[in-house]
Length: 474
Image 1 (cartoon, rainbow, N blue to C red):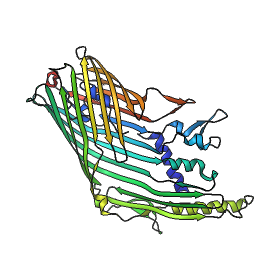
Image 2 (image 1 turned 135 degrees about the vertical axis):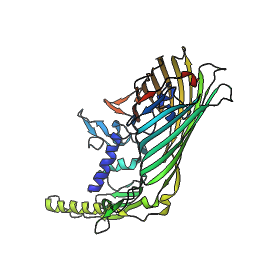
Image 3 (image 1 turned 60 degrees about the horizontal axis):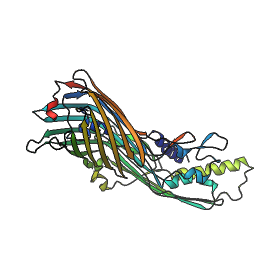
Image 4 (image 1 turned 135 degrees about the horizontal axis):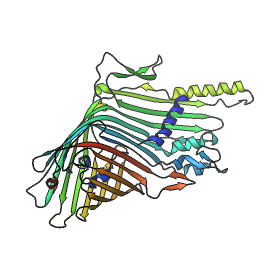
């Protein structure tokens, strides 16, 4: 029973602290935003720079679960959870979709540099860390949590509970330049990224059927997990062969769990001779191939069936008898959720593709390049789902070294706004701070925020090198 409690507690906690897979897209339209090349490798800076530890830090959350899924106003005017007895089953479950999800992303740069090469070339090198978690939570799990023993002769089919996670180090090198042979101003760029996987894991609850009545409980479950971790780590087992933790083998050298290779391609065109101030761009990012090592693979599973009918002739007046039944049932449920090491299949180390994104954007500049409006589409294609967003951006730049932008984004049928401040003096320290995913029309029910949410925060700095050369980007 303790294992079940821990698992459910972690799932509930992840809803509150989890974070999304994206970047600060407002930077796409900001002139001289130093990390624009991470959004499109064709975008360049008019001045070289260097960044150090945590020079580009990002953190965000994306989920179709809101606080109003879990918190309700009770008849007495106080707030209570969706499992409170005064909250009806219909009221508690109506806000949950068939499949709920939570995305988590965190990343930072260890070091990065941007260098001007020749008349129009721009070279970038980045070393950073990325962590990602993606979880699917089926509706039937919340149904079981709410109804549970309060129903009779009910069967719950909790299938499709999935969690996917990875963390990696990434070394990226990119280059962009203006194509002189084409009229107008066409700039193309590419980036190659070497990825060193620290860990990569997937958990899948293939089947969990729970039948509950006043006479009998029946539970059948099967779940599997596959992971790639540092090869010095292994699963520790008890005398009965069940997993009791993760151990470290001092005799083995620490080695990465796998490697990856990813590529970004981008282009930017300025229609100077047709519509002055108009430009368009496109980027295809994270065309990715991952290879995990067989020696770093571990596998585990849990499966079993229990049938409990010890409720017959149970006297609730006898506390000792009742406690004995509860203890017996907890022991059986704990056995059901115990994890055993599984056989590692060789296909766990196969090559695989993952997570490309497509970005298409257009921007128009006016008032002597002091104001811009932009439109952007981004599609992200992850292992568990696809995601799409549309952005309208307004950017004001009174001085060459400062800009401020506001954005309005449509995502998951929600309107969200964001902002960005970008300060880039020719000497000193470049600094930016931005936030996206703030609800434009916040949904409140009894003062409880609700609806899908996607909040993303990014900040960073860099040190400029040399003189600014604005003409190289014209």
